[in-house]
Image: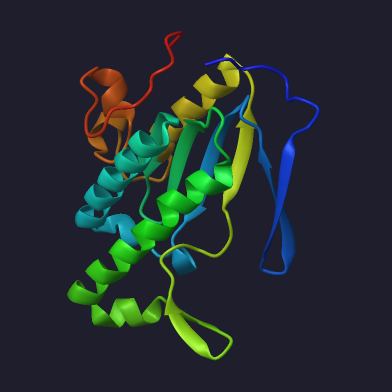
Length: 196
């Protein structure tokens, strides 16, 4: 993956979330460390079925869109991804990951817990609608060096330990740590940088 300094004509996208401007930089020369959270920061991913469904969906989107997935972790209330978009816009990748999965998760939660499903509805204007993800694009940090990427991969894999969920990274099933430990790529394959 060719990492280099940001080019002069970087594409900036502005989103308004919680009445504060949020800027997202679409720079295909950089890796992107992304974080996005569940609505109301609820621990919706304590449900292993939702974790499985998200990983299947993430793998399909990655395969369809042809971006590199270098690391991930599904935490109870949020997701961390480390991706290299190549020529794709980050907002398009996030849309393809978040919007269809929100629909799938909404159907699943309506079947297993109508009370929780109702609690995840928000009012926009005069209409109520289901919202799985917290409003806005989430957090996006650009990484230009191998050292930054390696540090974020370690951060992602150690996140369940820091949160007190496990004692060792290989004890947590919803992380790309397993794909680094076993080249077969379980539970889904990742695009491991060749310099790691």
